Length: 231
Image 1 (cartoon, helix red, strand yellow):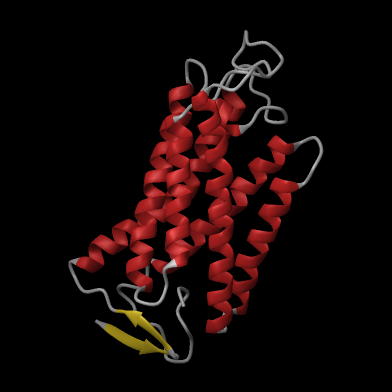
Image 2: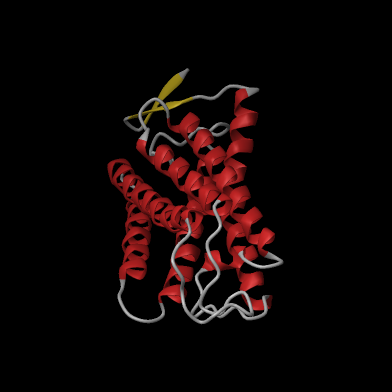
């Protein structure tokens, strides 16, 4: 079933589908805070971990590495679930936004499943250099750029959608998130690990905001005078 809102067709999700859709969207609300919190706690408490030198994925190594592995896989699965819920809310018009978020979630899962190699002195007792990549470390290294490239792409897709809806604030927020994250990830020089951490925080915040806004769609119609957050 669909209805027309401010020049845009949106799907009306009926119970019990509405309840399951809201549950999927809650996964998107929760995923970002869980991801950032687990990373922050570990970065501050793991012996030998230096956020200015070591990448976030290095937290998957060592005796307590299972915590970050679980974080990657769990948040990735929640992000894929969020993408499914978002697709339900936005159908039939939108495909690319949910698809890119699903790619992001899948990339996090791959990052957790395929662990990198020790290096740069972490975990403690590891040499200061970086050795030749193992096959699983090569897969691990490729997954995060794909994941965050997809999430940045989703920001741009939603920015375009919000422009079409006349939601300039949300369009600016989405585009600004994409540009800032991309600049942080590509900026040359030292401090790349810190810049990556900041990019993770701002993209996770954006995803959480989109999920929180989309969560009202199955149950509350938007006023005729304004397009809904999901467009």
